[in-house]
Amino acid sequence: MTQAAAMRLAGVELDDDLPSPRLPPFIEADRQQAIADLAVDSHFVPLLGNPSGGPYGLKLSIRDGRLVFDIRDASGAPVTAVGLVLGPFRRLMKDYELLVDSHILAVEEGREQRIQAIDMGRRGLHNEGAALMRTRLDGKIEMDFDTARRLFTLVFVLHQRVSAR
Image (cartoon, one colour):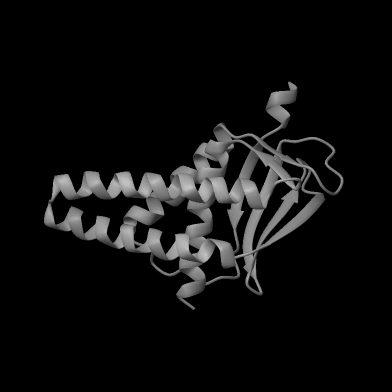
């Protein structure tokens, strides 16, 4: 296995302990696509714990107001767990939720120009979320921008599940 092939995510799971409310099809499709894309193309390297080489498995959860990255090696053995406070992500999550709701409404109304404008806003928030993710994980987990964008999508889904409790 090449070094690049080892520095990636083989799979990502979201916390099974959270309720799984019926997410709008749009959000569910984003979740499925993010997980599939991460398994195919990601750059992810834990810098803490005992990283013996990847590819890595990742379970994302929210515990006591913290986003937890539970990282495992290819055999399922724990590598490390990294926790981040969610506070810095809250504004982005609220703004992103408003855009998703607006997107769903625009699709229902068939307003193509509005959909395009909302998609531009979503991309901007995704980029901001990815940059924040990389900054908050600096020195803990190394990842490329696209990996951070996809993980932001999954953090949003987790946030939706927590909000539904």
